[in-house]
Length: 187
Image (cartoon, rainbow, N blue to C red; front, side, top):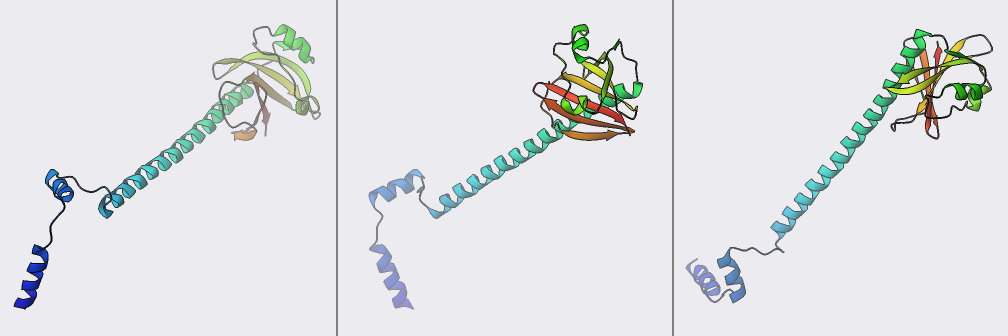
């Protein structure tokens, strides 16, 4: 065993560090190409990537929830106005005549084909949806059932083209260019 120790000692005594390696050790700097620093960089990168992905997913969920919440707020207000069953301030079956008389609106009312083909226009009044002026049109289907159609300017991005049922009222929301339509009918 003594011979082995002697050979090992002789072997390592014959070895020496280069001036560059010795300077690096004395300065306390480590090599950037070491396996340890590469693994450390990889873990840090993975953590940053995971944080970014998590942030994007959470932001997406919050945005979707907010957009649905906006639609639900509109539907609640439409249902509340519909349930009041207030009479029309202007009695007319002509959308052109209603446009001429409802001068406080900052948009022109247009009846979509899906409404004009199934309902008869009876009249209109002003109302507010989410603190903005809107038109409340009273319409009647062939069986005599009264529904209300609300028209207002699109102010926020929210999921349109959906049906929401609140209590005994079905609200169908959709848009056409810059107008939002909300059809409220009794169930």
